[in-house]
Image (tube, rainbow, N blue to C red):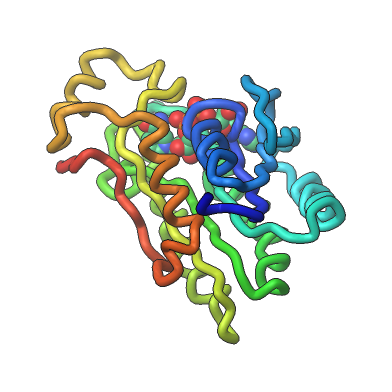
Amino acid sequence: MRLEGKVAVVTGAAKGIGEQITRKFVSEGARVVAVDLTDLTYELEGVSGYHLNITNREDCKKFADYLQETYGQVDILVNNAGITKDALLQKMTDEMWDQVINVNLTGVYNLSKHIAPMMITAGKGSVINIASVVGEFGNIGQSNYAATKAGVYGLTKTWAKEFARKGAAIRVNAISPGYVMTDMMQTVPEKLLEKFAGMTMLGRLGQPEEIANAACFLASDEASYVTGHNLSVNGGMRL
Ligand SMILES: NC(=O)c1ccc[n+]([C@@H]2O[C@H](COP(=O)([O-])OP(=O)(O)OC[C@H]3O[C@@H](n4cnc5c(N)ncnc54)[C@H](O)[C@@H]3O)[C@@H](O)[C@H]2O)c1
């Protein structure tokens, strides 16, 4: 039980990678507050769902107040919620740009801003930001998405420095998944998925459970000397 007694918040937890992170954390003894726009697609002991749109600043503040009153602490925050609105730059609308920036980058800021002070007061915690291989390598048709994920690295490294001041044991890391079989991949043509699989050393796409395993390690005390790091979980993808 690597997360026994810990309280975790996971965003975008209704399905996909967030669901698997939630399942893994609970199986390791954590209590998880599973945040999403929509209802959870599953029921699990130790998991309580919370409706929140991370683009709404006021609601993020209310959520942090609720966490303080209900749990008194947050040990683990996983900023996982994310969206794509893909188009080549010439065809990308301002709305597509704004929506992706608002969820994937500003949303991470909105929530972390209110939860980090609880960790700073406690002097301990682990923040995990889910970035992407696209933030590392770029990808055709994903200017908006790549910009947010590269931005997440900047936040990760900055917060790793800021939150560890005055001897606090607060670690901040990113995970960059490769292409993982979730609903997010449903709009990607089969041919392209095959191409992505072929770009990995392992010759296949990833499963959400494989990202959850990495998140569990970073959340746990086993990673007590790991901070400011970006962990690529991509089957050995190369450009
Ligand atoms: N699937 C992949 O191949 C892949 C690869 C690299 C990175 N990622 C990243 O992993 C994370 C999870 O992706 P996934 O594949 O599980 O996606 P998904 O679409 O299956 O799930 C995303 C979840 O986020 C929620 N969400 C979206 N906007 C929200 C908002 N404003 N507030 C609260 N919740 C919101 C959705 O309702 C959904 O339940 C994302 O950050 C994504 O960018 C995914």
